Image (cartoon, rainbow, N blue to C red):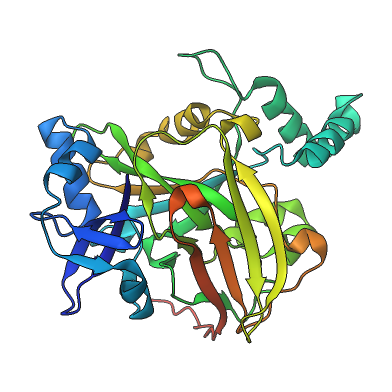
Length: 330
């Protein structure tokens, strides 16, 4: 099942089931968060509850998208109660990339860079037996809900950025129950979007490079993530032509960690188990236009698409003016 959040023609919030180009509104719930919280309270699966309530009006998804009414598939009314985080060095990539990576991490571990050491740790211990914790992944914080961009919205790069590059990924979307239990609502395609030039200067700049916008959606895939996910990442020039394109893969079959292990090492912290909060957690990628020496320019569009997730995620790159306010002493 695919769910989307959107606004009606009159501006009211809706959550609906997407089937092809048809969106059927779910009655009784204006948001995915409300639907998820009801499913938790009633002890029902999200798909079961959504299907039973899909009795509203129908609309064309394309018409909704063209009108700019698509919303991120999960959000919180208070952006400060949404955590956006992620893990890196988790994907094995294509067969060629995988072979090259294994050659890089072979031999004496002390000769490896810190990044390659982390990748090797994941390959060796990222898929533990059921019920056990594996090795910790690389982890980073991106921001709160204010940085999330829905499909069709601009991806804003601060004017002090050295680069604005896409990262086509799968994100897990979660709601924390009243008892502090994390519940996975589903998965969505995403563009994790980072400043790779800043990160390349020194890996300790990773934290700075990640404090950027991100794209999520448009659809939420309810249920388990397929073991193998295929997609395509594109950069479109201002005239709409494809400037760069490359396939990407995800899912546990193409990862050095299990989804469960990545989730364990995120939610093991009490900070991330606060009732009512929303979490968007990116699982990583092995495909970047930056690796092919592409520098995306303002006015160009990022496009991330995977058939299993319905419509493509599209965001145009824009530059955001930044004012450096002087800190005042009270």
